[in-house]
Image (cartoon, rainbow, N blue to C red; front, side, top):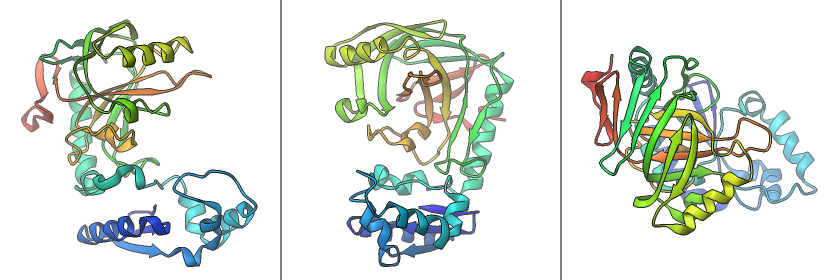
Length: 298
């Protein structure tokens, strides 16, 4: 799927995803967007190159495939960054794009503004998580709202700080090239706990000993794999819960996520997506029970 500005949406599909593609068109039409479905009989090279939504091997048709993308469809060559695959979303497409881009843009700006004005952040849960996050010296927020930048999956304000510490009784799921989410789904209370000290995850423990073992192996493979390299706040008003799909859209769910590793060569990024909890900014509650509190946002 690719977007040309905000005027047209082009949907390409393999035969196996005909039903998904038609559902996307209906949703886009209801949102008042001009959608164009491009059948694969116009793009034979793509069909012969891809067996599924993942490229298995660059076969002998790749040169033709590349020509189709770059020459016959110049808008893809120009806007290739503004594209994403729908299959990972499963039946959640309507949630991800339930709100117009300008609504997500405005709401993300309000959340970012609240964090900028009161950078002394606390994230806590009834299960025992109590994180102190100091954003006062962090770099400017990276805003992902579906309008600015290349990422079309909207709803996130993210930054980085080493000033994060506290105990974590993790409830949530994962996003990583290593499919922790596929194996463990959304983990509940007592499954996993750890401490964060000066931006480093340490002392993993919990009832799910296999999960603890897997994460310890991951952290042992590179010295930066347990380093908090991202503090993110999901702002997509349509994604109100976690599913454990290991798909990027879950990073936009309402609430906190922490990104570990991935900024140094050899390190692999792992997102910890937190379910629920409370977020206080400068002593003022801005997030509670899985939702932001509009009255607390500027």
